[in-house]
Amino acid sequence: MMDLLMQDIQTAVNDKAKRAGYSMVIDTSARVANGANTTVVLYSNGENDITDEISKQLNAAAPATTATTPSGGTALPDGLLK
Image (cartoon, rainbow, N blue to C red; front, side, top):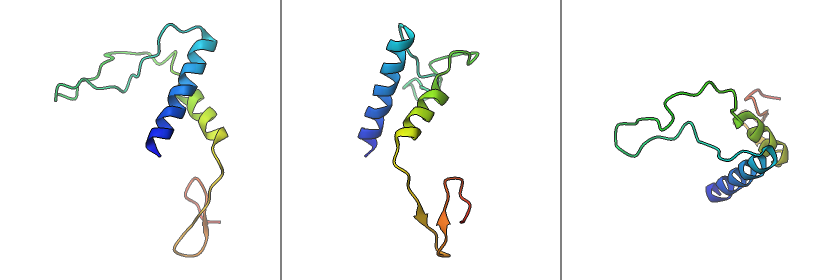
């Protein structure tokens, strides 16, 4: 399931980058594999951050789900009971 999610994210990012004419997209949360937990991107003002846009796009296409809580209510996405 995680592989499918990552594939969906990659596709959405690639599509957005092509439509917007970006030459690259950088994962600002990426870490260097040196054991020191050092970030790859040292600074970003966030002006060109497409995370929210991609997240909204993926969530809009996701099937609606509900979960039954132990009390028998239905859990809403924000955790409230209905």
